[in-house]
Amino acid sequence: MPRKKKKDAQELLVEAISEALLEKKAKDPVILDFKGSGHSVCDAFIITHGNSRTQSEALAEEVIHRVKKQTGLNPWHKEGFENAEWILIDYIDVVVHIFQEAQRKFFNLEKLWADSKVVKIED
Image (cartoon, rainbow, N blue to C red; front, side, top):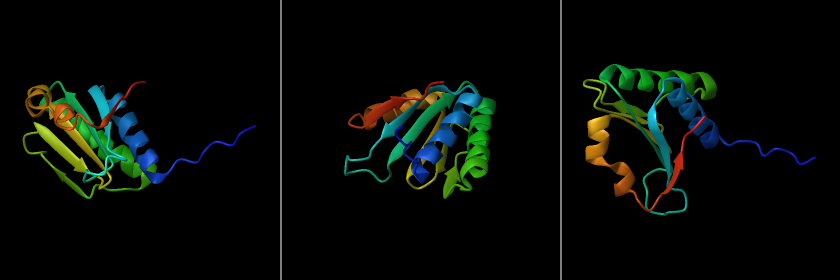
């Protein structure tokens, strides 16, 4: 029987973030995978949006809580909690962007980074 490949720290981080977003019913969560592109400041963006300020805040709080619980990591930087229109949670190699829907459409990070590999986060 083949042995399972052990997950690395980044895979565990992305898994914890994905689980948190699904738990709180994030809208259209995706991973933009930059590995191998050679021109990015990190390995991945995780992008999603909430239907309201309350949901966006809940998504961010669940990400921070679950990542800490499952990996022991705290964000290196976080911002945007004041108005919760665009919350950024930076784990250095992985950056989480939680928008409200209008801001996600306006900034359109998926199009801006169109040369990245896009992976939908699903149950």
